[in-house]
Structures are given as structure tokens and as C-alpha cells.
Image 1 (cartoon, chains in turn blue, red):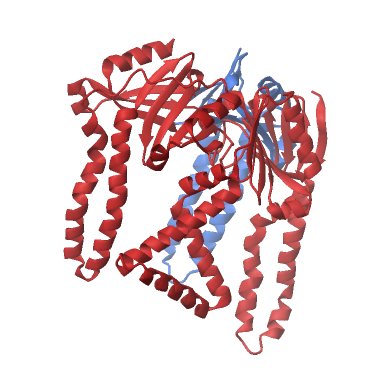
Image 2: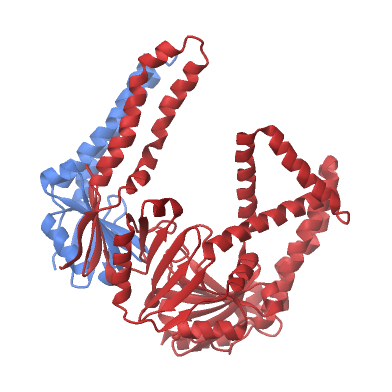
Length: 143
Length: 479
């Protein structure tokens, strides 16, 4: 079988969730700027550092992560290739999978995508950005 | 897919469990109250901010309620399913064929509401937490339990030991340290409730009892008394957990019923039993008692609970019970034993600890002269387990061994203060490892480490076996 790439909209979900966490850093930066005892240079450096981190995540890391992530659901196993810096290739046989969790947040429901966490003897595997049909096919095979 | 139990909500008492995660919020009204109670005119400002306390209380009621409303479970012919979550919606699916242990737990506070807890475990997931926990009505719990049990037809063998066997077990396997921790926390809490006077009175009584033990110095007597009390408390707790005890074998299930205050019913899948473990302490060895445990993921997972199969009993009784409950597990006599000159490998660590104990005591006394007496007493106390350990290792040297027959491997070895005889089905062995130190390489012997199925790392080690025997074992068990 061919490798399947996750839905493109999964990248939007990652970006939105990460953007939400930036609220904390915005508040922290505001606090640092408001502190009269702290030199403004330090507050500025902190703000630039986290902003650069976020820009890197949103423009480089997430696109690369999504492009490198792919699955192959075979008759007896699931193969996952992932990783930005280190390339990981993992293979889970259906026999080893003991239970699984299918989950989606509000954004995923909006885009019609799901995550599947497979719990197997000796490890866990998360499949991101599956369509409901793909998730159903996979879970039916496991059960 | 056919529904056996249609999607339904958990018992309303499940809301109590959901409330725990919001309990931290209670600190807000508590801190506010403590802040204003100290000021004489604190009532008016406290009343002005009472909306915050009401919001917290509202959160504590509404959020668990929503959480409970969004929790539904069902049972199909193939799997257990739990749907939950408001924003992040999750569906946990556990295929029925992968369930290793299904437990029905009835604590006292749930029994008042006619509710019970269902705990489902598989070979995957967290080592300390069950894969699925549901709070359901007693009727529904019975329905789920019986549904699984009835699939297995009639009972094949029923085993109910006498109460005194469980009492002996509780005395032998009680965890003294946890008993002391429990005792200390109970003492501290009651002291806070009843006042310092009460604490002083209890301590005075303990000291008076310690004074009665003229043979021992006062500090040693005090420590010995604390250990004894801790051991007693742990034994009583273990007794309450495991008495009454009964187990029944069905077609491919093993049912275990245990506990007086918290009743627990376990249904273990026989094919999921990773090994049977016959444990003996030196006392057990002396009185020819055997305590049989099993390793089945989910059984005995909770803290302080044991995965017991047969409580303390003699060899004939225990082998009869094991044969009735798990006839698949065949014990074999050891065919491979440690090499002839292995005694030093077995006793090296306990011997070293005995030899080092007294010089270490002298060094400590020189460094801390004010504590000389205490150090001397602690040395005497530490000497006892060291000698005990040495004796265990000597016994281990002459009883350790390996046997393999009919798809089962029998291992005899010691771990810490306990002697183990373990029967492992070959298919439950995930890895075998041979380890040699430079000294062992010279003598052409090695340690065998066998890893078995588990949520964590479970290994069994037999020391100083001849390499030729190990190679033969690896070759024959690989087939």
C-alpha cells in the first residue's frame, strides 16, 4: 500500500494551538516591560527570543513536520515515518495493539480530522490528521 | 457490531471523582477567609468578595456535572468503549480479547450509594494506572462482570483457604515501612485534632513500654518498638485487604474474590497470566510454607495489594491448589544448577556489607561523636538484616536452578530477602540475556536474565550458570 500523508489542515491546528500558548509569553513580556527594576534590553531580548521561536515553529518546523509525516496501514501492521531532525520509521503490528484512543478538539472537528493514539505492548503511537474514514478503517481493523 | 450494553452514563457518584481535579480551587475561598478572619473589621470586605467563593462552589458543582453528562460507556460484542470530553472529545476503545483483568471494586463509601467501580486493564498503558475506570451502579457492575464470567460456562475448580492461612500471609508479607508511615501520619493527624497533650501522652506510653524491655538499650528498644508497631499495622491492613479470600477457575478465566472493607472481584484471563511465582522467605523455608502469587497485568496493581493465588500453606496444599486453579503451569525440578564454585558470587555482597558495617560505624562515630550511642544501636540493628541477607543467599546458592519442559520454564532464584520459584510459559518470555563479568569469563560461567511480559521491566536473574548449560538453554527454548 502507498504511504498516506496527514490532512494539510492538521498544520493549521498545530499552529493555532501553539499561537494560543503565546498568550502566556505576551503577558510575561508585558510584565517584564512594566517592571521598572528590569533593564528594558532584557525584556526586549526575551520578547525577541520567544517571537523568533514562534516564527521558526510556524514557518519552518510545522511545515517540515507535516511534510515528513506519513502513514501506511497494511494488512497486518501500521508503518509511520516521522521526524524533522531525526527521521523515525516505526512499525506496529495489529497484534501488539491492546487499546486505542480516538480524540479530536474543536478545531479538528471543524476541519473534519482526528487523532488516534494506539497503545501497544511496549509503546505508544499517535497518528495525527486522519480523516474520520481513515480512523474508522484503522480502529475496525484493530478491534 | 452488536451492543450488549447500550451507551449509558456512569453512576452519579462518579461526579465525586471528577470533583477532585477542581479541589485546588477551594484554596481561593480558604485563603480569602483566613486573610479576613485575622482583621477585626474583616466581615464587610469578606462579604463584598463573597461572589468569588460562590463562583468557586458553582464551578465545583457545574464542571463535574458537565463532565459526568459527557461520560458514556457501552459494551459491544467486541469491545468496551468510553466516550468523554466536552472540548477535547475522546473515545477509549478496549477490545475484549485484550482485557487481561477486569476488576469490580466496592469501597464502603460507594456501597452506601449502591455503586461499584469497574477497572479494566490490558498489557499496554500506564504501569501504575488502570486503562479504564468506571463508576457504575452495583446492578450494572454485576451485569458486566457476569457477562464476562458466563461466557466461560461452569466453574472448574473452587478454592477457599482457611482464614488462618491469610493471617499467616499477612504477618509474613506485611510492609513494615509503609506501616510506620501510616502510623506516623495517623499519629500526626490525630495529634492535630486532639492536641499536643494527646501526642505527649502517647509518646510517654511508648517510652514506658520501651523501658520495660530491660535487655535492650532504650534507643534500640524504641526503634524495635516502632518497627514492631509498623509491622503490626501493615499486617492488619494486609489482612483487611485479603480476608476473606477465594478463587475459582472457569474455562479460560480465573476469578478471585478478596477483601472485607473494600470488596474486590478480579477476573483474570488465564492466557494473560505471565508467570506463577512461589515466594518463600527464610521463615517460610524453615516452616515449609509457600505463598503463591501470579503476575497478570491489572491484578494486584493497586498500592499495597498483592497478586495472590494461594496464601501461606504447605507444599502439598499449595501445589494442589495451583494444579486446580492453573493446571497449565507445570513445575519442573531444576536440571541446570549454578556451577560448583559459586558460593562467593552469591554471598559476596552480604558478606561485604557485614565486613564494612563495623568500620563504617567507627568512622561515623569519629565524625559525629555526639551520636556515638545512636550509631552503635543502628549498627546492631543493621547487622540483623545483613546476616539475614547472607543466609538467604546461602540458601539460594543451593536451591537456584533452571528447568524447561513442555513449553514452560521454571526458575529458582532469590531477589532481596525472598526466594522465588517462577514458572513462565515460553511464549511470555520476551528476551533472554547472558551477562558475564571478567571474573565469570575466566571461569566460563554467566548470569542468565529472563525478561517477561509486563507494563514495566520484569526480569528474573539466575547467577553463575555454566556457559555450556546456558547455550543449551538458549538453543532449546528458542525452538
